[in-house]
Image 1 (tube, one colour):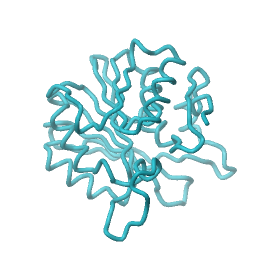
Image 2: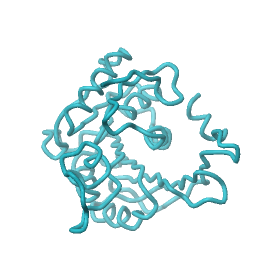
Image 3: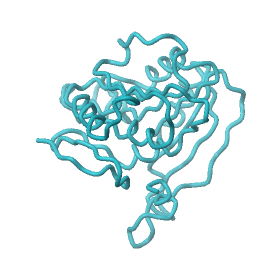
Length: 237
């Protein structure tokens, strides 16, 4: 069963979601508002696009061509339907495939975005490896190492990759970035509320970039009464 909803905070964008599938969250709103988009950007790749919330939001910020790749068939179909529903077929293309199999050209993209699976898989992990939510949450088909190897190949020189992830994986992220000649350039910690621990990490790196990491001011999601902060409302405007 599918539902049509307004994309979180974006009253001019609609998105199709499956009731039983992995549904996008605020993470997918934060990332396209965090990534650096310059005027000369022509091509953007979104890895693990799901039902395409990130490409849809990116389309409000740039005229660049956007390609979303999604390994799960049902999610890719919903992504295509959402693109058509918003009449964005001329700007957004959805590909149903494993990103590791896509025959993209080397140095093809100016920007790569990715909201990857957050959790490592270990011998003690217990789940159905074919379940759609498991694939979205755990590194079953895509690992951090995979993401940055792909980025090194597909990004143009000085191109950027931006991820949304969990703070506890920061050392893993930095290690994999440096392995692939991707220099960390900016980090932002996201907090549910003030006085609470960070639960989301936004990070961007540049292929063959010069050293120089900026830690941005913290982003707080909710006020004490549970409503969104002005910082978050700015994203929706």
